[in-house]
Length: 343
Image (cartoon, rainbow, N blue to C red; front, side):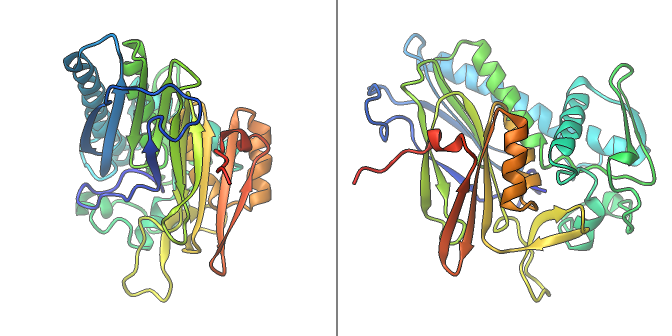
């Protein structure tokens, strides 16, 4: 799954912040520099950039640090590698009363699982274990993850929002790495928004939420070419979330005839091979963008576009490397985010 990994193995950023405003034609030029705070969280670099002409730098830093502290708190809740995390209390007991944050993420995961026709699945841990993606996990956890796949699928998860109870059947084991990072970005963004920050961006290893009070003063985001690593597209994003999933990140090499990505296809029970393929999702929340991008990685472009059309507030950009030439496909509304290069 795309998301939190061991702290020692930082994820490469798969969608790159290029500029605050300076690529944008006709936008106001900000004389002040943004306040920037970066931390290592959730196995990646988390960076917050913020502007507010009304506040001194010290106040902006205080607000940003408040958001980062919240992320640090939430990281402990969803950490798949920590035996004491709330997530692993559920996994180890199979039946637990959970926090509001955990229930919110599980309900969102369920909704996105349905939207992606089962392609986003938080129960694929047996497949990840089999393919070596949990080799850094403490043995007390790794030994408990089932070897078989009978616990895979939403049929093995019962959620009761009223009582706050979660019940797992048939040895189901949850990994929320494909959605929790995006959810934490949303929580950080909510803190910044409540403080009425004029303009900010939260970037957690490529899972981003962009906000600006002036739509003409948008953020410019670069999307990588999955084959070369260079910037292939620039997006103009005002108040939206953006996330990319790619088959070239978080890969396993040793002892394999092919390079395996970290993306599991629940329908086949296999980890997909690297083909230099990426999916970028633009939507209203980072949790949704994160999870949908992960789920769409195992869809055909045609199916992904149908999901985008069904969802409404959702746009998709799919890039495939074909014999060294990138092929780009987009949903009908994605073009409005693309910055057209002047000839």
